[in-house]
Length: 267
Image 1: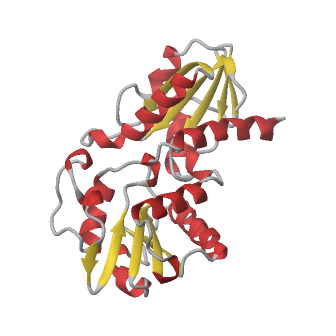
Image 2: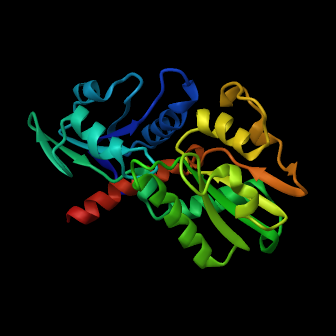
């Protein structure tokens, strides 16, 4: 992207008071982008950790500030929590003599499809795709249809590419459920990619238990081996399990692309 030496970038994550791995990807992407020297300042903020959403803008001195939510999709946090806490009034906010530009969440970018495919290939190298089912797992909730829309959109896009024998989506809190993966897929190889920002409780505890590759909830992802034991041999099939898509280093590029997309849309 075009350098913005007079502007600041603020990357917003969810964070967690109990799981240090929740903020790890956002912190890593912040460091990576800061090292590139594209902005005068690069900072991050969280809903559940420090620095808090309400205080981060006071720590930034630039006149122009881009805010990119590091979330998988539009939803309650991107539409309600972040604007409320940061006092944003839409895509462009004039606040205290400064201009704040609120970008689309990172997970909305078209490049997400390539990241999913690259992640799926990396955890099952050499496995014939015509004998493989790709299962994209999201949280899902009956309270917000956007939670599932992102997964369903990726399933449609990847299915249309005819790369894998079959592509399906599954969710933790709505049907089709992750625990039904055996009936959702038919091929001898199953590649499972969690469509989450971080390796938090869902990806290293809940989903492995629902899949049947683990029988107890365990420790933090940084101390677990669940992602490194591929393939898992279950019910006569080989199941390959990936870490959350948001941990991919290429996510830093997606965040930058959302800044460029904002400028293009406003021009």
